[in-house]
Structure formats: structure tokens, C-alpha cells
Image (tube, rainbow over all chains, first blue to last red; front, side, top):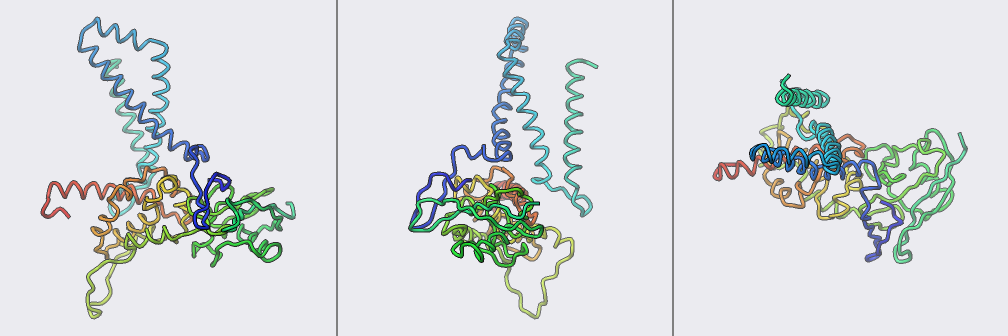
Length: 137
Length: 246
């Protein structure tokens, strides 16, 4: 934070105040705020999936209507933005996992890189399963 | 390499200035000079009224933390040549009230530090019982967190502390964890009572900058997240086993 920001001197002490735009002052702060914001798009994907499941449950007419809704250019755009944020969410949390969850195997700390790599492997396996479920091969 | 480098130093006189202003000084640019050397040159040769804290000049005492070009740094370990051709902007640690020039008021941090009881809590055994023994593996459990030198760079980097000064903060929680993980300590439950409130552990949103700026690789952000897990499990145990959960 810059000392040039507005502030008031209280009892001889200069009390700095954080700017409303503090999150633009460092790339790491911006990444953090984007990571927090990504949860909104995670929520959107869940809503989208639930709407999809409901449409399938309600029969072919509703399903076709849902496909039309999903093909709307605005919805496609929102979903692309949401995908970017979901990827950011996933990758940033993968990177943070070893810090929050230090694992020990036979008395030795498992290297952080290994924990991150195993998450990617898990992601790949789940993705392959979903691909097989949807496409069938 | 140029012979000199410009240093822009924040100046604040209590009672006279409404806000800090920047003063510019040219100091010799030498390969082995750190920002603290530049400040000492200014104090000795140019303007004796420039005020800043320092002591060991070897990254141990934790006194010389300041904001250098926007980043919290130990000025004794930050080389001027890394900022050539300059200028190097030196400001007090962010998020703390400024007493004068580059000196900040650290009382809030010291109060929070003592709240978490950063010492070994244990029912005293008689001296004849001998030392509390510890294996190298047990030492390794907390050694990383014991490296903290209380330099407060983590508080300066933490936007949560900047926005909410009630937050206990990175170093105090990392030090609480340092003693919790010490096999000789029995004070984990007492510390948890202090840290489980909303301004304790749960105020941390894992920005992670405390870990990035820590000159001793303590990883306060990691300590806090691990502590959250412990606290959550403890609360769960408390509900499942109300009579013997802790």
C-alpha cells in the first residue's frame, strides 16, 4: 500500500488506510480475488447441470428446449467465461493443496509436486470416465 | 554500473505532517550494499534525522522490515543492485500505524503474539525428572515454524489484516502452531480457544502472500490452513464425544 493514500493522523500516529482497489496493487492479490470470484461460476455450472438434469427428467420437449437455451450465443459466452474461471479455480486450488494438507508417508513428508501431480491424474481419470459415459468410447 | 542510486524515503514527522511525504537521496551504489546500508549512509552523511529501526543486519533480529518498491522486505537482505538503475522507494511496513519516518507501531502485533501463548505450556515436572526429551522426527514436525523472527513482513503483506486489524494474523497463528506441534507442549486446547473465534483462524482467506514474503520460509499460510483442519476436527469431536472430545 502506498503511503500517499488518504489518511488521518491519530494521536500523532499516521494511520494508513487500505484503498478499495488494494487487489489491483499486486498480481498475487488479483489472482486471489479472481480465485474467490471463481466460486460464483462454479455455482453457475452446478445450476446449469441441475437445469440440464431436470430437462432430461421432464422429457424430450423440455430437453430440446434446454438444448436451444444452451445454444444461445449469450449462454455459450457465459459458459466459456465460466469454464475459464472453473479451470482457474481448479488449478489454483491444486497448487495450494500441499500447503494446506501436508501428507506424511513412512515418517517422511510427501513432496508437494507429487500431491499436485496426483490431483491432475485424478482429474484425468474422472474426465476420461465422464467422456466414456457421454461419448461411449 | 552507475556510481549512485536514488533512494526515495518516506518521511513523517508526528505532530507536523498530516501524511508521509517522499524525500529523495542519492547514495553510492555498491555491489555489497543492501537497502539498510543506503539508509545508514543517508543518516550518517546526508540527513541525521531520518529514523528507522535496525539491529543485527544479518536477517536474525527482524527489526529492519520495510516496504521496498511496494514489497515488504528485510532491508538488511535486500540488495540495492537488484533495483538499479533505481530509484528505490523505501516506505514503512504497510498496515501498521507510523510513528515517525520508517518506524511503525508494533504494539498490536506484540499483544496478539502473547495471546497465543508462544511458549511451552506444561505442568512443571520437578527438575530431578530431567529434560523433556524429543526425537529428531518430533523436532522436524515444528522446526519450520520455529524459524519465525517476528519481523512482521507477513502482517504487512496480508490484506485481511489491513482491512480488519482485529485479525490475529499470520505470524501469531504460525507460532501457535509451532508450539502445538511441539511434542513437549500441552497447551493446544488453550490456544485453540483463543484462535477459534471469527477474528482468529477463520478470518484468513488464504491469500498466501504471507508465505511469499516470509524471509525465513515459515509458511504461515500453510500453518493456518492446517490449523483450520485441526480446529474443524476438534469441533466435530466435541459434538460427537461431548464428554471426552478434547
